[in-house]
Amino acid sequence: MYSWTGDKALRELEEANISKQCFPILLECATKVSHLFGICIILLFLCLCAIYLLDNLFKAIKVATDLETDAPHISAMSVITLEGLGLWFLCLTWL
Image 1 (cartoon, helix red, strand yellow):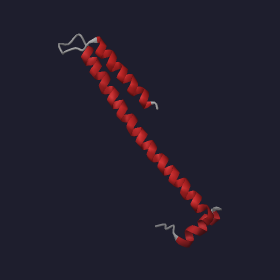
Image 2 (image 1 turned 90 degrees about the vertical axis):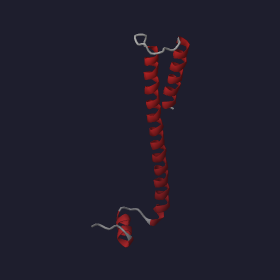
Image 3 (image 1 turned 135 degrees about the vertical axis):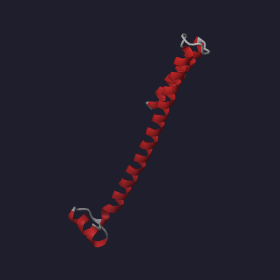
Image 4 (image 1 turned 45 degrees about the vertical axis):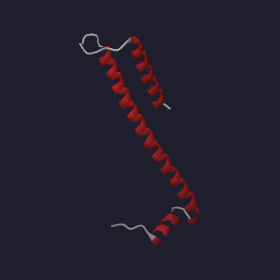
């Protein structure tokens, strides 16, 4: 098993021209990358939620406007409102 600690680690870093003075900068970069990665994961989750909601919204509109079924139907104004909400959610996913 390979262990990368202590003097061995410092020696290998120095061989790669990375000195102890670089550590604070490297730590700051790693912290920023970590935060950005977290933000990306959150945005991806929100986009997936929006896609799920839009899919269900459009399915509901299709069912509610299908005149070939005996199910209750919604008015044209309601359809326009629902479609507007769908487009609004779709725009939010692209922000």
